[in-house]
Length: 519
Image 1 (cartoon, rainbow, N blue to C red):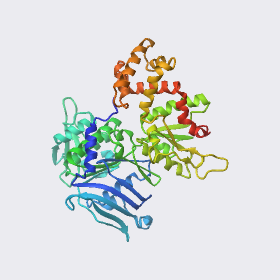
Image 2 (spheres, rainbow, N blue to C red):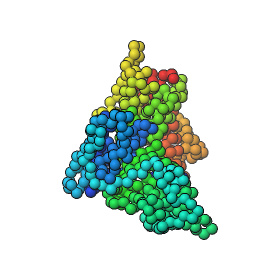
Image 3 (tube, rainbow, N blue to C red):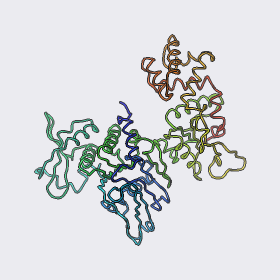
Image 4 (cartoon, one colour):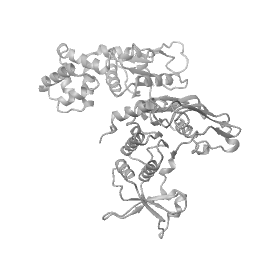
């Protein structure tokens, strides 16, 4: 089972480019939370038409989602921001500012709008747009939804039965991985209420939504409403993964990407799921925690580290998965050599150099943090403006205590290019100068020792012909009977870390005091 997205990179690039060119009739470009619940002067830019909001419970994900919908006339303020008399006095002076693209009002530039809570009511310059809101109640079993009680009864028969359309059937089948041609939408003829049912097929009996899985009904309902919506609609979804298998969650997000392309829709959803983030680019993810909003991919385990929900003594944040692997393997080698305890050190990838730096510094600036953090960045960032290492203001949080010394908040992988390029170059040079290196590399690749010449041939040839070092490990794996890219990466990093301890020392010597900290 693969966890890679099936959406083409060219489609992702085209969607991002379209936002940059403002090539939408209607689009929410920016939301500034001047004052709203736990946020003050925080801003979210929607640089991609499908946006994920990530964060722990109570971090403000739904607040941002509600703020995005509030400026639209179709969304009643009480749907996200209801007031309960004197018990909600904190709503006073709430204010949200918007930057919106609306070709009907202005052809080429964005327009500004405001929503504010003054004199016990919302005042907003509302705009017209089709908005779909899918709350968490969509995954409640039909038997627990009081409004569906009129569908219950041994003699019930629907007023009308409507087959799902071809686009809905195709999407539902791709998400759920099961035949959807037998589904019906059943109405009572009174109001807009309806339920779904599955017709009998072959030897299988028919059944109503009262016997659906929660995720099954949720997907059918979401897809059906989206396919019936107007183009340029805004789609808001709370906890997109509710009731869904991880694979179905990823497929649902992939469907939303295709909808964004095909129907010019904009989608914003909240999630706790890494699978929902897999198809999205870095700029499509925003993280909310402790009153802050940061852009960039952040997996759930990393978020737990940043919010102090783990029992760590040090957190290390890297740019990507390869950097995470370099950190793990080189740190183990360093700790073994210097007799340091590796346990209690968490390593997480954050999807880019800027997010790794920014999240690290925000974490370290928190006066009640329980452990420090450092960022491990690629060597080419060492010379870039804005990526200079700074001192961490005390290991215990807050001000530096007497007798404590500063440690750097950024460490760098050696080399002036990508870490992949540095490690490949060191291995190529070391095959002739470092005894047993080639043999250890061959064994690390899970190959027999007699295949050393074949390994040498592949490495030297690819080092000469490869034009993108990020792909070279996959290419070497193809040469060596289709070894997995991750296996090849790990073999090269392990061989490099133990053959070139000076490189490992260069990374970790600057933060050795942090590595030696006790719980």
